Amino acid sequence: MKPPKRQTPADSSLRQVNEPERMEALRSYQILDTDPEQVFNDIAQLSAFICGTPMSLVSLIDGERQWFKARVGMDAHETPREHAFCQYAMRASDVYEVPDATSDTRFSHNPLVTGDPHIRFYAGAPLLSPEGQPLGTLCALDTVPRELSADQRDALRILARQVMAHLELRRVRLQLDDERQKLEGVLRMANSTGEAMYASHRNEIFVKQDQRLVRVCTADLQYVEALGDYVNLHTTRERLTVYGTMKDLETKLPGRDFARVHRKYIVRLDRIIAIEADSALLDSVRDDGAARTPVRVPIGSSYKAGLLGRLNLV
Image (cartoon, rainbow, N blue to C red; front, side, top):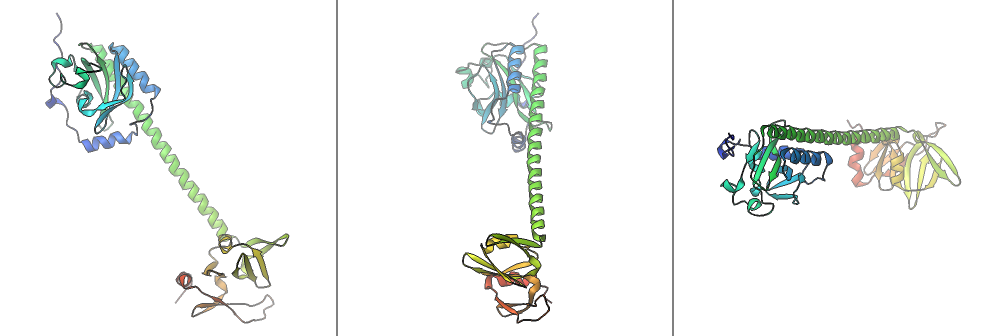
């Protein structure tokens, strides 16, 4: 005696899903429109072999289409969602089986039934995320009516779980890669900060003077003055003229000790003895202790607020 034919589950028996949450879960796998992967191809091939069908798919349901991560016996990469058997199967509580699509009013006029690939039989096991969100199915299809045996349905369930296990592994790997890139970014930032801090604490620079390199202690610098393509470094003992730009000097001088006060001038903050109108008066005491007339350096209007902000105003 033949067992009674299995009936396709009614629409009312299928679970209801929150589509925005389902789509967010699907997108978290970053799987749509990716290249074929052997592990998913192997599962689809094994599904077709076990179910004895010429076609098998790892199908994921997007907003308006079903897209195939793996496919056996079908040329199309995707089909419209409205034609997808899988949009029903993914919401089923178990394997969703359509013994003969031509005798089912939901599918008898489906273009995939009336035209290529002429689907008659369909069986799909839902692909469920750990949170229970349906993403698609692992399905087997045939061009003739049929039914799966109990063992074949068990195998389809097991293979669907394997698809999800590999999707989870893939997602975790992507997350780890993303975290690694973030960590590398933090390390690069930390290294850059460390280098900047080191640069800001350097107390000497080397400048090229004629054919020799001269070491200049930044504590001896009073101010830097731009002269066309050259820069004058005024120290407590001498003036050094070097080829360069103010921008070059700014990057080499410790930022905690020096401030740009004019497009042509950089001053050492602890040399400022007074601010008069739009000028800074710099201490010009020589190494031997003899006093000299303070040096007056102009302050540009666009630099003044920044300079005053760095002074301990009372």
